[in-house]
Length: 303
Image (cartoon, rainbow, N blue to C red; front, side, top):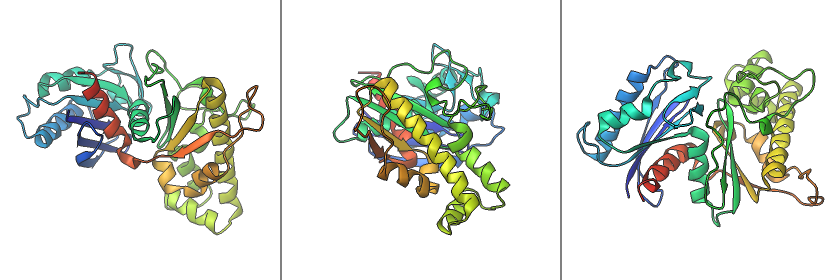
């Protein structure tokens, strides 16, 4: 079944028409305004969905899956917490899209959508799978025996398993916890560290400085690598995973960080895991993972 997938990111919104095999017929990309209102976002989604499906805005007919950047309320219809787009908190995005598009609409977090997309693309599909997505922020999703456990409903901050620094010097995360992976390895944190180090040009400049073996850049990357290692071990040991997939914008812009992890994965610390290395997989779908996953989940909800 063909479905529309929508991935609302902190910097980019992607909307795509996806078939039931996960292939993209078309994907549109547009900047996400940091001040976008719920009304504006709904109008953009409804208009794009109508154009892609070749139908009128009030009769889209194909299911629509929306991936939102944050934590959802238990009914999974509104954002409970969105640190990058706080003005969208509480707005009935899914209900308004359904009403205005005339289509069945489902709502998931961006981490869940990307996780389902990458899981669907994995060959073979692991029984216990996680996708760690490092973009503007950091989040993860799980697939256990073909199903995604609900890790989002009702929470107001990051998962404790993603806390990677428990020292007195741990940085305060925007979610309210101290020492989250987002404070050392996210795109926002690394971009800030890059500016503080005197590099203009964001993550690409940090990558170039690392390639020149500049000590400050190496220090920033090593700190992020240590945090990422800890997060991977925590995820593996807590959930007993077969494989963890790494994706998100930081993966594309800082290969020096992620390639090192993939080449030499951290060893699990849990009991009975001595001598084993966890399976770390590179993301296969790139920036389209959330769009594809959201569409596939919307289509599967009707079967």
